Amino acid sequence: MTNSFRSALPLLALVLACGGGSSSIRAGNMPEGGSFHGIWQSPQYGNMHLCESGAQVVGDYEKDERRGRIQGTIQGDLLRFQWEERREMVVGRPTTTRGRGYFRIAKGQDNDWYFQGEWGHDADETGGGPWNGVRMRRGNPTRCAASDGGGTSGGSNDASWDDEGGSDSYDDSSSGSSDPEPDAALEGLDEY
Image 1 (cartoon, rainbow, N blue to C red):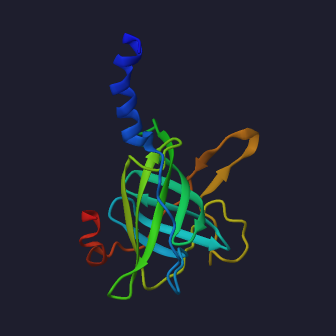
Image 2 (cartoon, helix red, strand yellow):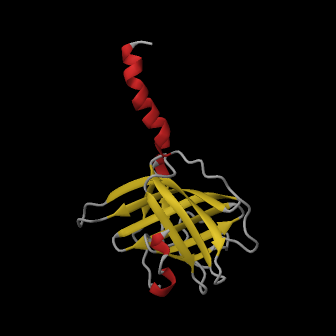
Image 3 (spheres, helix red, strand yellow):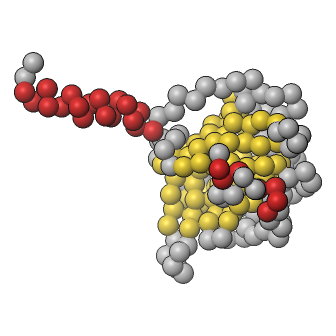
């Protein structure tokens, strides 16, 4: 074994051990009555409107200066998705970031629906941080980004994909939320 190969072994072992953000998350069975469709509250990402049509889910989220969208596919009890977020920390200088993630849905002992998941940057599905939420008992989603208007959203599309010219930029110019933030429903979610 050459010295250069021998010196590279610890680095190779570290890269393989970390996994590079690729996910080995395995889907289970969707719980009876389970659906990602609805209005969700996330301690990390605020108010979320998700619309489910077959195995496809589209939606958006907003909290403080964050505005984002997700689009993904249901596999058993998992929603695997791509996200894109626009933040404007300095007026007139927005930044856009993208990545992937997953949510695993479960019914709590209180009969509410919860998801626990994680997000990652770019092609990584994990490694960025937790993303948890609880579905609100009332209300139907009214903001479904990239929805085809198939009637599942219960309202208009306030945010949309801009796919012209190959651009995947997010237009959130008309999004806004008047939904209250039910703090009691969020207690303990950020501890998962």
